[in-house]
Length: 79
Image (cartoon, rainbow, N blue to C red; front, top):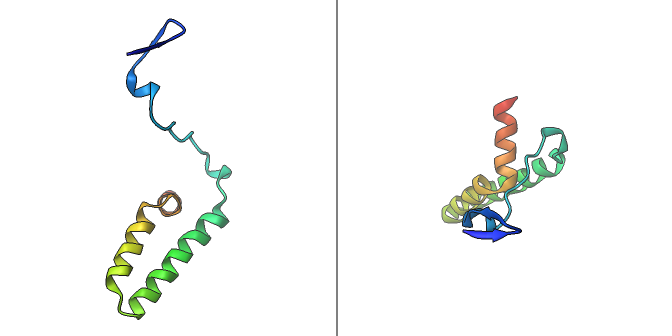
């Protein structure tokens, strides 16, 4: 445990990247989120048309793990 100003903090709280703050739905730039997801979808469609299935799978993984993909999924699930 590390100490800061005589207050004990667990090591897991004292190191690493800070967690994202809770974001309210009205604070999100949905236009930008949807544009990013649409761009991924267009790239996936183009890769499939060209027969590049490995590239399409890689792009699908990027989309599903991206911030835009996660936020858009959350929006669609909660509407």
